[in-house]
Length: 186
Picture 1 (cartoon, one colour):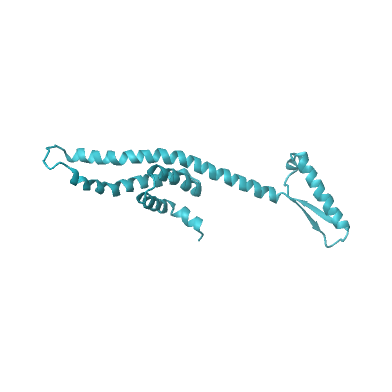
Picture 2 (cartoon, rainbow, N blue to C red; picture 1 turned 60 degrees about the horizontal axis):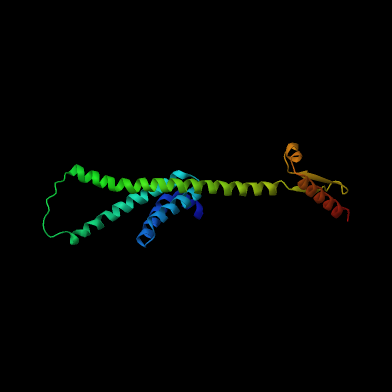
C-alpha cells in the first residue's frame, strides 16, 4: 500500500492529529485551517473531507483547551460573588463556545477546499493532456514479411482529430514521416 493511498484513507484522522500537534507547538489556528483545506482537498480531490477535518480539528481543539480555562481560578477574586446559573445556561455557553470555532472552521476550510480541489483537478487535467499528447505520436512499424514496406500506425483515433490539427502539428508529423523514410532508405 503506497503512502498516497494511506493518506487518502486516513487523511481525516492523520491531519486532525497533525494539526493538533502543530497548534500546540505554536502554529496559528487560521494557518492550520487554511492548510487543512488546501492539502486534504488536494490529496482527496474532494471538499467534504477537508471540511470534516477542519470541523473535527476545531471541536477536538476546543475540548482539549476547555480544561485549561479552569486554571484561571488562581486569578479570580478571593471574595465570593454570587452568580446564578442553571445547567441549561452553562450548557448553552459551552455549546456556543464550540459552535463559533466550528462555524469559523467550516467557512475557512470550505473556501480553501474549493481552491485545493480545483487545483488538483487542474493538475490532473494537465497530466492527462500531456499523457494523451504523448500517446498520440506517430509510430512506424517495419513489416518483417516484406522487407521493402513499412506501415504507418497513427494513434490519432479518428480523422476528425487529424483534420483539427494545426498546420504546425501537421508539418511536424510530415517531418517525422520523412525522417523515418530517409532512415529506412539508408
